[in-house]
Image (cartoon, rainbow, N blue to C red; front, side, top):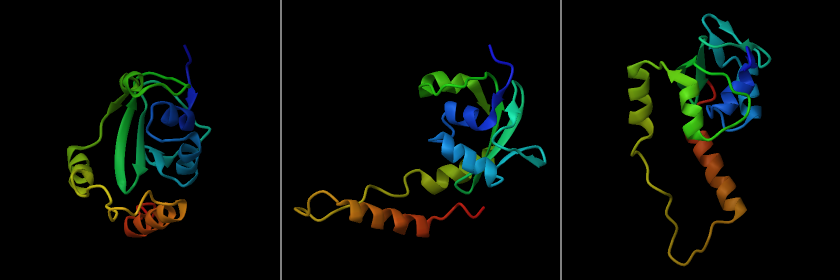
Length: 134
């Protein structure tokens, strides 16, 4: 078993970030913190340490329970960390996202959206809900 793992690798492997590149970018952007200090992507994290992740306008707090360096399924990743996010932050997250919007609707017979349509929709959503400026 490993003693330490890179923080970007751990965040990716326990599925906090969708890709390791996103985890590394978050570290470079100062969104990954431990106490008062921001962490570099190469910081070696150990069991028992607490990491604060600012993602999408919300602050999540995770305690490292088990170190893994390979991405695993969500069921196997869940016991590797303990979610210590404050209740008010979780409520803020839930009230914003859960049940707010349904799926996008298209006119009957319009067919499947093209790549251009999807990009336009993603750009619109990004402009409306730009949480990266935290």
